[in-house]
Amino acid sequence: MIRDDARLQPLLGMARPKRDKAVERIRSLGSALVAYSGGVDSALLLQLAREALGDHAVAFTAISPAVAPDELEGAREVARRIGAPHVEVPSRELDDPRYAKNATDRCYFCKTELYDLALAEARSRGLSAVLAGTNADELHDHRPGLAAAAEHSVVQPLAEVGLTKDEIRALSREAGLPTWDKPQQPCLSSRIPYGIEVTPARLDQLAQSEMALRRLGLREFRVRYHGDVARIEVAADELPRLLEVRDEAARELRRAGFKYVSVDLEELRSGRLNEGIVLLRAPSRP
Image (cartoon, rainbow, N blue to C red; front, side, top):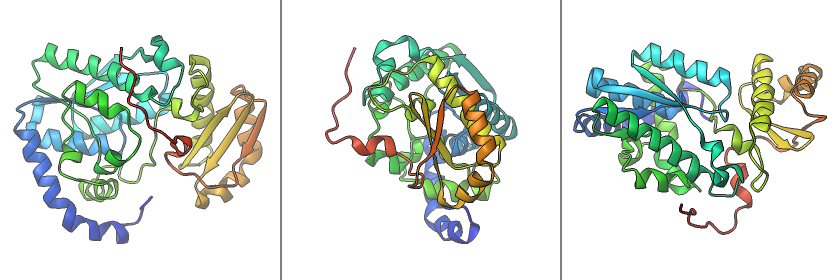
């Protein structure tokens, strides 16, 4: 992940024209509800939507057990900083057995729930579109949620204009958004291997574990669920910090319900859960 200005600065020459196109695309919609998680992409999208539409842009967050409470509070704070109205609605994707069984198309059912809720909220407010912060890089990854976005006619301005993750970070840094160097935070269900059921108890274990590690000063990491075993993946430059606090980390993860705590000798790689997928299937349909 690019964190320093010296490497981000050269990206701005290509990113700024794309940014302007995204603003014009959003403005053409007249009004919009922004599917907002508080991550790098959705925070910039919300900022651009507010620039393009003013009070006709509203942030929308689905409250899910697959998102740690401190991540939700961070999203609230960024929305306040941007000055956007922020609507929160409970999400019940875990009630869908197709989601809970945790097949490789799990994200399709999560995003279907999200966009069902977002479209209902947009209609109730008289807003013309739902926006999502998909970036151009994600179009080349295993993203079953993209099918759900297409089925719900969700507009994805950042991807449409070709903005990459690094370009979004550069623009966010320029805009003064605190999310510009935020590590990627996919939902907690992604910490559970495909085929292992997603349950509220397991998600809570993971939430408590990752919040504890953040309190201990770690930023870029995952806690992977393996039954009684928690496997910590951490960015290479954060391994020394993890070793400094290993006793406290192990204690906190045992308190969260794990019996054993291990550290992966390979460094963190985002999207690692998908590396074992050989054949991508079309998402199951209701």
